[in-house]
Amino acid sequence: MQKKEQNLLQKNIGECLKTVFKTTKKSNSFIKTGDYLYLQTYSSFLNQMNDLSDTILNTINICTQFLKLDPEKSILNEKTHDEKYKIMSHLIGDIVDLIDKHIDDAIEDRKAKKDDKTRGIIKKVGNFKIFHAKQVMRPQFTFQDKIDNFGPFIPKFPAKKNSLIQTNSNENNPQNHLGNTENSHLYEYEILHSKLPNHLFEIPEQNSFLEIQDTPLIFVDTLEKFKEIISHLKKEKEIGVEVENHVYHSYQGFICILKISTRKQDILIDTIKLRSNINEMNEIFTDSNIIKIFNNGSEQILHLQRDFNVYVVNMFDLFISSSLLLDSNDHSIADVIKIFLNIQIEHEFDLVDWRIRPLPKEVLEFARQELHYFIPLYDKLRSILIMKAKEENQNQNQNQNENQNQNQNQNENQNQNQNQNQNQNQNQNQNQNQNQNQNQNQNQNQNQNQNQNENQNSKSKSKSKSK
Image (cartoon, rainbow, N blue to C red; front, side):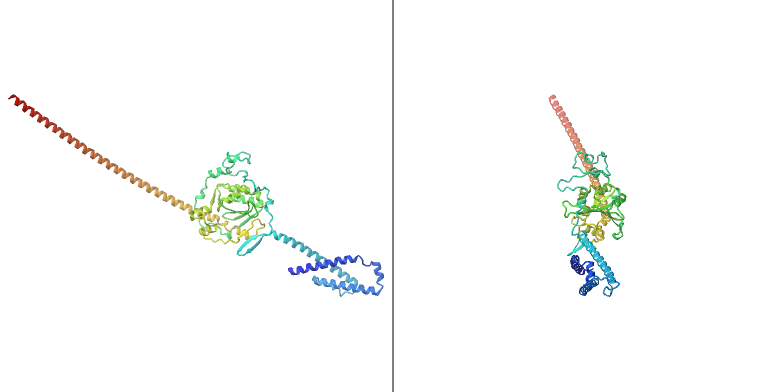
């Protein structure tokens, strides 16, 4: 029924109700049955009653036409009072049923209008496409854990999964996990001492991922499904992780959707409905053999710890690795997907209120648009980094070999110079020795000559004395 007809019907029903109330009030002063039989004997009274009866019957006939009722016989065509009474009774019953129906419809419309305020609406505002609702009941009211917006953040200590150190039976005691200081990280030891899995350093096969249209999308909003997902994720080597955090109308904000991608499916977990169970994800997130792939994950990891006491051991950050390769940090995840995978991401929505339930299929598909490519992007960036590391190692080895050869040549040259210097020194020493010997010989000869001369002189002197 169109809105114009609805308004007209409501107006007429209102007028009819007023008339019914007046008629009911007047009926209390009607002539009693005994008096009526007596008064019928008067022709003047009988004529007035017949005129009034015709007016009532015409009014009922007009109502049947307006309300589009289709009686088997027309009340105006019947001559006997019994037949007229019978048809009129049926018509009044139909009119009352129709009134009841419209009252029920009005009540349902009222409820629908109330529900419409909380139901999500996809709306275009200028060039922006948004998903919102006029009124959304705050999910915080349903949280089992009390949120403290005023005190400092105090970490809670759930049963520690995948621990590398032994703990006491009292899991809630920070001393069991944090050593001597309560400000340490619950998984500090595991983060510092866990070994990176071998598959992290293996170059993956190219194009080994499913297209988004061929990948199942699973929405998890029951505990049974959630436990199935955990058992499935235990078998994975790597998972893509992203959260949708609601910060409007909230002091600290809270996670509404936890998004996880594997090589075979994309998973959206309703963290509003399953908030008190999400800490069971520690079984996956603290397993050092499963690489958790984030994009700019520092804030997301803080939110996971704050909201669910979920910790992360061994992760790969797409933003940090792409920034290293691009030598820039001025890029979005959509830019990185375009650059390295040559896939253009078209953002369907500019703003989404992730608190609204249910989320339509269009919004769910939007939620996994970028997440789906986390693992393919991880493979691509990882292979490039591994190749670059190998090249750098090769270059480093070459430089080391060149340096070794240079050092060896330098040592050889130094040895040659040392030998030459030694030979030169030896020759100099030999020459010096020869010169010294020659000088000694000359001196000896001179001495001998001098002695001879002295002997001769002495002999000559002695001869002259003897004469």
